[in-house]
Length: 276
Image (tube, rainbow, N blue to C red):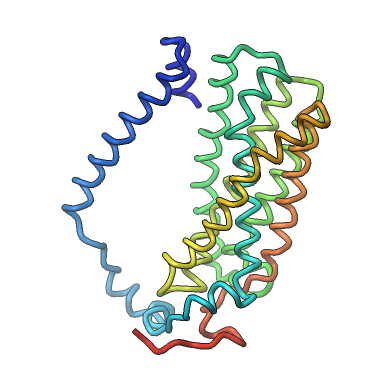
């Protein structure tokens, strides 16, 4: 959003936003490929590889794809994640229009302001990772709360709910932008634990499980702009779409209480495939 606003302001051509992004994207992808091909996968330090947790991860068995998709153990995780792209895509697709049409800002100014919450949210996600490590070091890993992972999901959902609901209902543009920033901080904190949770429950199938989870998430992200647009058109405001996102995030956080942070092969009712 930040660079798109600068490009639009300099060229006055929306098409140039896509052209420049495409060129830069190909250049960065090629540069990353050349860099990554010269590196090998990092090995854990010996004192980490010798821990009981590391040994259990290496020994964990894989599960057939059908068990991952059709058994119920993973669906609370999938649905919790689906709420995140749904809420995030509202801001990615509708935030500039929200600021221009509902808050009456200029398009370039709206684009620049739209980028600020995402910069701050990126920092919040990193800080949430430090917080999870802090909880883990103190052994707060058990029970429904599982503070070293799930606490950030619960906290992020509450921050998003308060920030977004306030932004949707306030008359003040400055307060709305501030609370949108707060809401995106909440989404960043909410998102942080998910990949770590996947490594907890599927240590030897992390890529596959995260791919299934992300597929569900992208369904939510795909539907979000359309559903939000329909709701906004029928209600005449952006209040209801934002409130729907709040409700979905809170439901996602509640579903996280059903996720057990143990390898799937240890969870009751899942057939285990032969080790590979």
